[in-house]
Amino acid sequence: MAAHWPPRVGDVVHYVSHGSPVLPDGTQRYPSACRAAIVTLVDTYQDWPPGHHIGHVGLAVLNPTGAFFDQGVFHGVGDPADDAPGARCHTGGRAYPAGTWHVPETGD
Image (tube, rainbow, N blue to C red; front, side, top):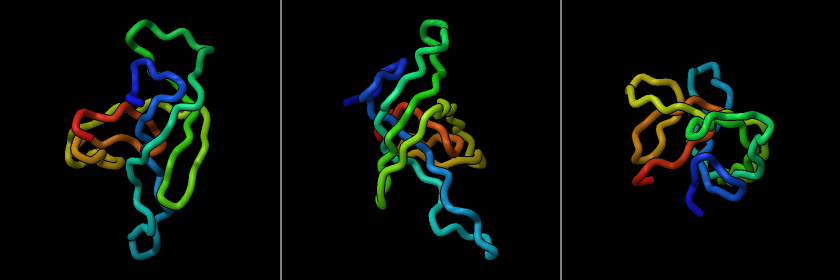
């Protein structure tokens, strides 16, 4: 199911994982990455202006090694700069902060 704006329960979105801690040699066993996620909860306790829902959602994140569940996950704003922190999201080419969700970009 494609994502909608504002998000609805059951929509597929992307979640940017935090990755594992940085090791003493500066590497990470699991770097931050864009993962598929299903919206399980939409925060209905906040009044967002129409068209400006920056909401907190609950997610079921699908990782290659298992599932992760979280509530109150913030919407991420992508940055096209090459030096932006966060994971690159496939062909969309934007960087999003770790621990946030976003609507998949065209071409993903």
